[in-house]
Image 1 (cartoon, rainbow, N blue to C red):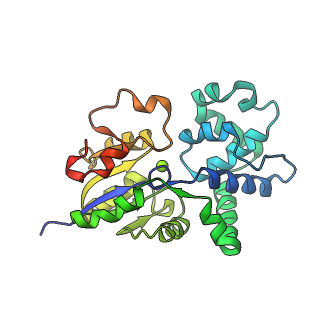
Image 2: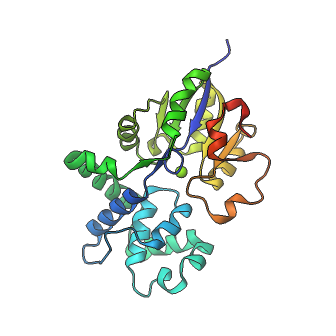
Amino acid sequence: MLSPSLLVFDFDGVIVDGMNEYWWSARRACLRLHPAIDLPESTPPQFRQLRPWIHHGWEMVLIAALISEQCGPLEQLGVQEFVHDYAAYCTAALKRFSWTPALLQQALEAVRADAVRTDRDAWLALHQPYPGVPERLNAFSEENMAWAVLTTKARDFTAELLASMGLKPERLDGHESGSKPEVLRRLACDWTLSGFVEDRRPTLETVRATPGLESLPCWLVSWGYLRPADFTDLSGAIRLLRPEQFAAPLADWP
Ligand SMILES: [Mg+2]
């Protein structure tokens, strides 16, 4: 019997714009670990500019700490130079602060758990679904297409947000499930995967380079947290998806 079809979506930068929440949570998590530092309440421009390079939640806490550092690499180099060696500067900063990714991830999730418990509505309101996206996702049922969410966010917080937007994916996997290529390979055992929709080009490139996923259709959404160079020289394997194309039936996507 043919396995049913499943279209898989990343969450942040594809379904939801959570920029205000990222800073809100990252700032608080950073202050829990480092109470003496000074961080603005409103989202700093460097944080917005760096968001396309951020892969995991814990990096946002580290970036907040880097923004607070006077004479640190971010202040000295500026964002343009910093991103040339983003991973190396993050590794050096972890060492300088004596932090680990696990510690930062725990701090971030503790802040979010407190926010959900104490003022759930205010926390939810920090997130904005991209215009038309919830409606389009709900319309996939008319195309007999099941859809899933695969995110590096924690599963529980993503579930809260999806429910608040009236969205019910067939499956939801968070960072607890493993890396995105690992999860996609597992999903491919039970489903015919119709594609993966992401806003992080390196993730799509890794997916396409993963044995078993070489022919998975991959779309890079134009409305997410993209680096300027992400739009250029896309290989034929990864196709740019603009809002008007996303709104069309799946069979008509580029
Ligand atoms: Mg994303």
